[in-house]
Length: 321
Ligand SMILES: Cc1cc2nc3c(=O)[nH]c(=O)nc-3n(C[C@H](O)[C@H](O)[C@H](O)COP(=O)(O)OP(=O)(O)OC[C@H]3O[C@@H](n4cnc5c(N)ncnc54)[C@H](O)[C@@H]3O)c2cc1C
Image 1 (cartoon, rainbow, N blue to C red):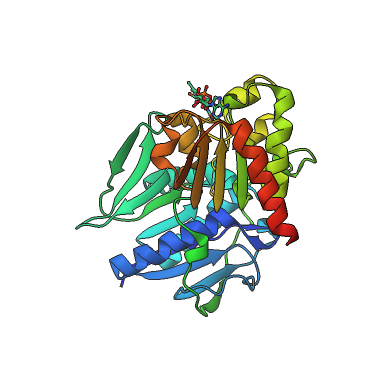
Image 2 (cartoon, helix red, strand yellow; image 1 turned 90 degrees about the vertical axis):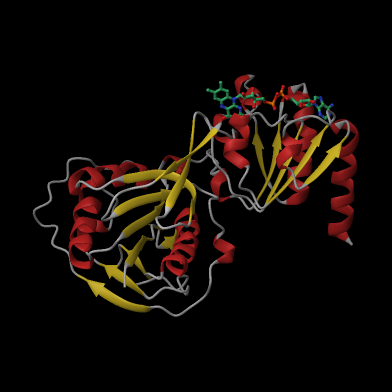
């Protein structure tokens, strides 16, 4: 039976959300390919939150893995791959994965297909990734032997993970000879002002349709009423009305919220790339032909200045009832 290793990144001991989404992709792959699914955590114990359907979880404890370094991660995973001989290694396309997976692929001379949004079954698995700013979907296949695949945030749904009680097995690695040449600094989203929209469950995003910085208060109030983070399209950031960490899209963040409410956003491809995998997309736009409606689950063709205050009032009323 073939093996799929799913690397589950832990952030302060908690499973990273993008890693859990990739794990859900792993569950689908294991079912489709008839392979074993084995989680791998770089930790002495498996966190409680990993009660998901997997054949087992390998825990890897080493003092060198306590703080992220591409050098130690690559060396540890290379040793696990040598021991397990998997057919596939999957991971979420996190900032860390972007750093160490290409180095791993180069070191063990195996292909890496990065930032995939899904896969297609067939005699051989075809990996789907976006190219040319998301305008084209490329189908990628690899030859025989191990392939390394990372999945974009939102490619799969962590809330659809099948539960289970995987067996836990610890595996030793020897990292004493690893020369650490690259040390990671503090994660940038930990700085006080920064917002990590990729973790937000609800996002109210505002576009150029708002017209004026002062009017942002309307949308801010709606976001507060919904308990949502405020996001935006690029022009709102370019005008300096919101900081860049609020921008969603190809040159901003990729988000996977359960609810994405787009207010006065046309839905250009560069914006869609960052949000089209959200669970439920609601769009408010006065132009019925705006491209955002092509991917919206619910569309309101109306003037946002009329709709947003009414929506905010209705939500507040509902919450206080
Ligand atoms: C290399 C590159 C990278 C890019 N990266 C990004 C990115 O990361 N994120 C991003 O968002 N964009 C990005 N862009 C820009 C992108 O192409 C679009 O220009 C941008 O997304 C448009 O933003 P918008 O929808 O807010 O504005 P517009 O396209 O101007 O749309 C405004 C919308 O508001 C509607 N509207 C106006 N008034 C009202 C009203 N009163 N009530 C209701 N609706 C109203 C209009 O009908 C219109 O549909 C990038 C572009 C390039 C070339």
